[in-house]
Length: 189
Image 1: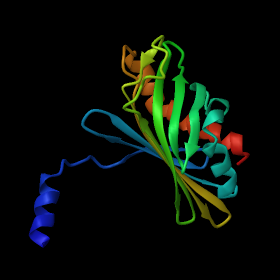
Image 2 (image 1 turned 90 degrees about the vertical axis):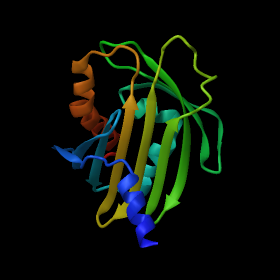
Image 3 (image 1 turned 120 degrees about the vertical axis):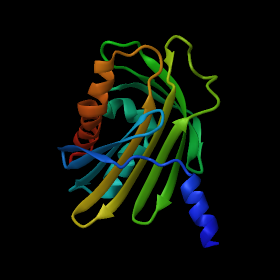
Image 4 (image 1 turned 180 degrees about the horizontal axis):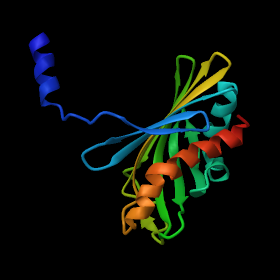
C-alpha cells in the first residue's frame, strides 16, 4: 500500500508553493503558479461573527452589491439542498464585460460553511453579448474563531478573450485584495 501511495505521489503533477503577496484589511494574501493559471488565496481574520459573513455571501443574488467587479449576479431557479446555478456578469475598466453561469454549492463544515463555485458545463443561460469566461473556480470557507471568524477565499479565474497584461497583473495583485476588502466593508468588519 505504501508503495502505491508513493507511486501516485510521484506521478501527480507538482504544484508550486504558495508565495506571499502581502497583507491588507486583516488578510494574508498568496498566489500559486499552476500549469495554466495563477491561483489566488486570501486568508482573513475579522472581528465579526461567522454567521454575519455567511449570511452575506450565501445570498448569491447580492454579490453584485458586495463586489465591484460583479455587475450582475442572479440565481437561476432556486438553490436546492445547497446546490444551484448562478449567472454572473463581470466588469473591469479597460476590457469587455465577461459572463458565466456557475454551478454553486454550500456545505456545512466544522465551525462554519464552505461555498464553492465553478464554471458550469451548461452555459445556455448566457446572453452571448459578452465574452465567455474561460474558467471561474472559487472556494470560500467561513469559520467561527475566537473574537470573530476566519474567511478563506481561493480563486482560479481565466477571463478569456483579449486582456492587456497590466490589467491581469492589477487583478492578481491589488484587485484581488480589494475584492476581499469589499466583503469586509459589506459585513462591517
